[in-house]
Length: 460
Figure 1 (cartoon, rainbow, N blue to C red):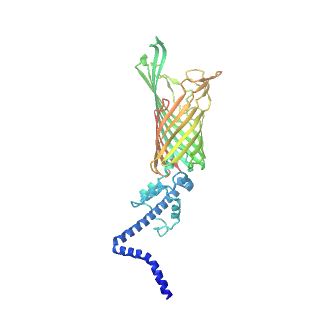
Figure 2 (figure 1 turned 90 degrees about the vertical axis):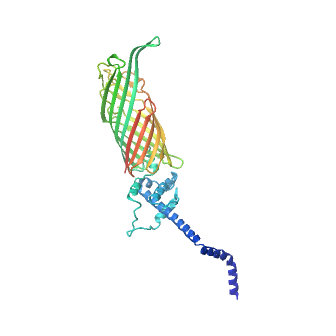
Figure 3 (figure 1 turned 60 degrees about the horizontal axis):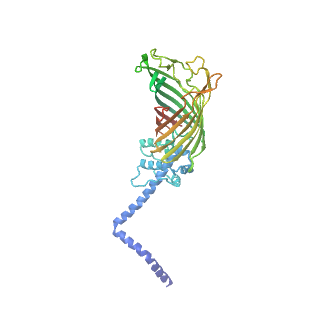
């Protein structure tokens, strides 16, 4: 009797809960379309979850394959504002043929990647190996990817996480200078009496260099640069046969090794959320190229004494140079900001001949020191390419000479202001090889008209 009473009470209490479920079951039974919609919704949710897990796992594989990501800890990735490399996740989802409508997950949590890596793999072969992802062309493209910050920073900061980097480079620099010389005096403040000399110099300089960068540690690298210079100059001057309209022309070309430089880069501060990478550098340049001092001049045109040309062209500065600098780099995807400040110190040197036109002109030469300043930004286009723009300047003091028994004398007009605007592009050809192209336009008369450089850094 008591059992029946308890059963009756339980049924009465469960009736409010069972009636809605029964009504829903009757509705689903009466409407097969609702049943199918519910099943589709459940499958979509499962598919989204599986695609996210697969994408995170593939991104983890790419991270382990890339030396740039392998060198960064999870905390460093978060500090750089990247979280997990979401750009790789999106690329891998697209490469794997993700179904449209599956949302990309920017900044996928690290926990998901770690959990996916620990989860058992599905679809593996009998030997436990995973099947290949995508076609061979897609796989080759994946191998060529680098981190966006690494691509953008190429050429702007040392790659400390690389053990050895060899760079083959070519640079083409062009100068075009016109000069008007007046030798005489003004009569009645209006009439010039004397000689007028109009000259023009065109110079083309090609520099082929091989540079090496070797990392002693994560914060210290050694640098070596071996240049070879091929240059030619064309000199034009009016005054042939005492005529102001007749122009004489002469060309001189030369080639030899340039000034070899070596030094180091030392990272003082690693980049984090509120601070940039800070790198101190020291570069020493040896006078291994052809010195500009003591080069004899000739008169190629006997009818034009205004045209004086050197017998050969220098390929170096002729003095030791010490160049300390500090550079800064801050990444905030998709923008990388960089800048530098430095000082160029030229060591005074005794030379046998200062002025070839003077028989006895031995003495001491001190090229003007200079202050360097530059900065710009790089914009990351994708995980293989970036573009950059920057402004750089070298503000040099006047050159001084000291003849025996005399004090230092300033060479008039030897101070210079060299300011240029640069546009660059970096493209990762593979995970080890990068193409870097820079076009430089002179903004001041002392700067070259233009300079074009191509560099191919290969990292091991």
